[in-house]
Image 1 (cartoon, one colour):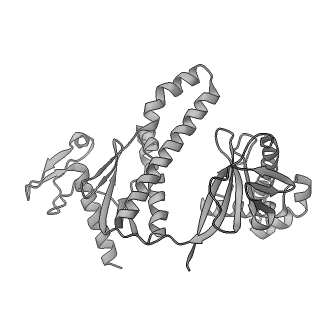
Image 2 (image 1 turned 90 degrees about the vertical axis):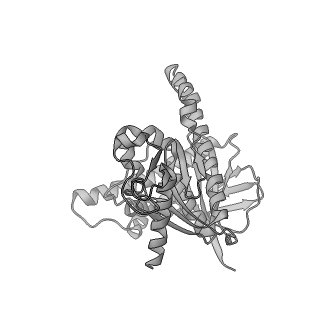
Image 3 (image 1 turned 90 degrees about the horizontal axis):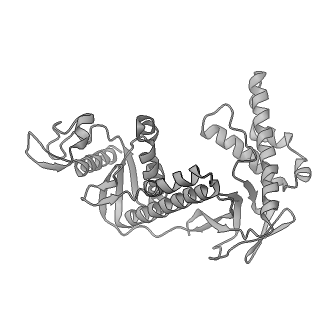
Length: 345
């Protein structure tokens, strides 16, 4: 039986234990900042950058003084090196007392019994709304923007069943319409932030930071839930998903930051990617350059161009006289590019 890695998150029952978790998280921050300081020292004196093994040697014996499990100290060092390589940074940001709490652990560092988890001499209870499917491989305690604590368990579970869908779908991402599919189906953008913008501004104006923070968290949760449901539906119905690789970071610099972040393009692509892998769905990201201007019927370049053409939602091809919906035409071109990329392999 093939296995896959999956993370299960449970909320900690905060009464009486939030202070203990906060103290442990600050100890983890000290380890992280020590790793960052070691990297800074190596850069300043033009020395060899410390590796994971070097950081583990430098932090040996600190676990007792910090009140952490020794495997947690090693996990922080490992994460530091991983993030430095992942983001290709010479040095990472410091973790201050306002940073969200984070306490990684490995299987030997925790003991899970029913709805309790024991770590470093502390016992924490969590809302056990679903049973763990197997033994814990590793995990972490984490804190969200509302100061709520969660425990995350990483387990091995049997692979999900392969999709029974047969559709081939191209997806064009947008702002008013989150995604337009090549079969004509459109996923409207709920615009959670736009709906609550006035309430957030009111709370900020009256210095109700806690209320504003809670609203931001609710918006993020609703957006995440919506994208989870839509990505799950698509991976159930399709055997091939091709999506345009539009850059969110570039558009955020073009006075579209609020709309782009509210749409959640990057999160949507990420959800589609890992769910497609789990369900044996072919997933591709292709360049959407000129996808709107190119006729999906004959390939001529007669579509709306530039900023003036943004308001044109339908257009007629001058060569084959086909009538196109702007976004559906782009999705069809994206699907064609996906088929071409698969044919070359």
